[in-house]
Amino acid sequence: MASDDVEDLIGSVRTAVEGVTGRWDRDYYREKTRTGDAPVEMYAAMAEQGLFALGVPEEHGGAGGGLVATAAAMEAMSEAGMPPLLFSLTSFARQAILHSGSSQQVTDHVVPSLTAERTFSFAMTEPEAGTNSFAMRTRADRQADGSYRVNGQKVFISGADQADHMLLVARTTPAESVERKADGISLFVLPRDTAGVSMDRMAIDWKAPEKQFSVWFDDVLLPPEALVGEEGKGVAAMFQSLNSERVVIAAWTLGLGTRAVAKAVAYARERAPWGAPIGSYQSVAHPLARAKAQLVAARLVTYEAARVFDAGGQAGDLSNVAKYLASEASYAAVDAALQAHGGSAFDEDSDIVTLWPMIRLLRIAPLNNEMVLNYIAEHILGLPRSY
Image 1 (cartoon, rainbow, N blue to C red):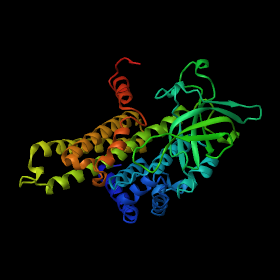
Image 2: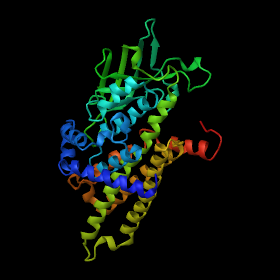
Image 3: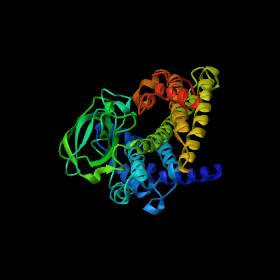
Image 4: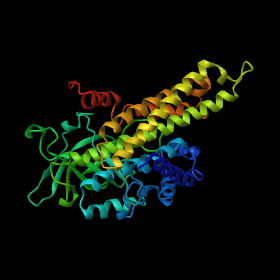
């Protein structure tokens, strides 16, 4: 896809997003955050505008547009101050099903997601393994009748209470019994209310309506058709989801960073305690200008990663670079915005400090930036593995 075509597609998606943000705005999002209620009206409006259908090929009833369109929706919603977590989770979880699932699984799970009738959480992270996903302990043991018995625990599972289904990553062969650490990992799709699945909310306040959960699997029985792809060969599908996740997260942070800069610029133009607007002072202007430059560069890499992904190329390198650059640029943006606003930034009514927790968290999750740098050092620079 040529650069002009990418920008045209992004423009079309932004127009569709305006159909949502014109009805449900940042005040609505913050109220849902305060009450802890799910922003169901926002998600319904996104479905009405066809946003949940983005990224799914037209042959499956989707709106097409690939990861470029999905990222554009995420960026625009975030820029409006309404990052839709359930949309992002659903968009990249279903990539694994599109990549390795059966035609029946696409019909059963992907098609209903086009109108948000089916949404997903992504159950991968574990308390002991952390970012070392290959060390996961959650087991899915095949039974004599072909079903699977699942036992284990996942943590930091965002939106687990709101999504009606989850994509589960589990070991069907223990790590100590495989030659390659990537072998023996399988993916499953299951309803949230499956017998034996329980969850507890974690005490995380990141200024969003969606919460994080510890999820337990106690003798959970899954039918054979819950397995996505081939048993023990789920890594390729997993990374299909993870690479798209990196890009969607990058777009998410870009939107928030852009919002932070825009609010700071508007304030710096008006605030004039000594007569001249504080935006005329280089100590205020330069951090904002530097953050803007970083956001522009990160945005170019993000959409190039999405374009390569959509073209079927090896998008892992660019996806990781995009996640790193965008999250660091957005952090610089919110820090500059906080400094420009001074003490008023810490009044939540100014809605500046309220952006900080989410932007800061996205430097850590879903993959911390130190691990991203390890990836770049090893896979792009060819340096020896450090861990």
